[in-house]
Length: 261
Image (cartoon, rainbow, N blue to C red; front, side, top):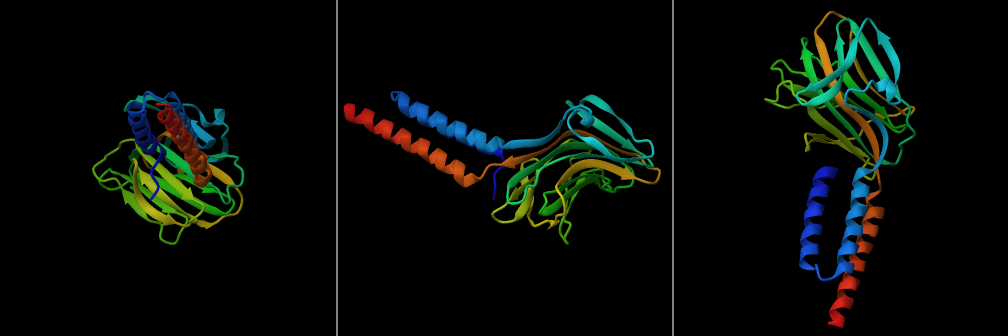
């Protein structure tokens, strides 16, 4: 099981702080520990490839309109439940944004989405994010169920599992699809909790990434997109070696100070 980066960083920071308190008389030890902490923080951040954030127009962030029909109502919203977002309101309309990406075959990656489905009068997931890594394709589609709770469905396998965040209502939800190249599968995290695992994806064609929505009949459909991002996660083993090196350095420093005493 893979722990999302923010939770991992909090745990690491606490352990580092406690160790530094215990060995405050040894500055070299503290420096080495800080180096190790910095290494793991960089590892957690990864390399950002694509990012839509807040109320910015996606076309100002490297996206382009790949397809559009009807008259989708688009625009910035501010302080929506405390967040800014790019809003899509659809009725007999649709729009899809695309962003160019490189081939991700053999790499670990994280796809993150934070959105609020405001209205879904047909209880169908018409808003979606799609990724073709060049090797596999994955998709997430979003909506509200008949009780008004956020619903997400994964595409990219014959199972197409669905998860509903019961009792959440029309709230912002954070989704993370995290791919592990070593296992060749992805897991879906919803608000920091893994809900679906071992998604293998469908065969890929050409690297592509995009998000949007559409429905050809009259309906009341609206989603507010706070975040859409894609990043490469560094190879864990390489960063683990660097972190171990920092810990060994700390140990040697500690040993030298003790001998001097």
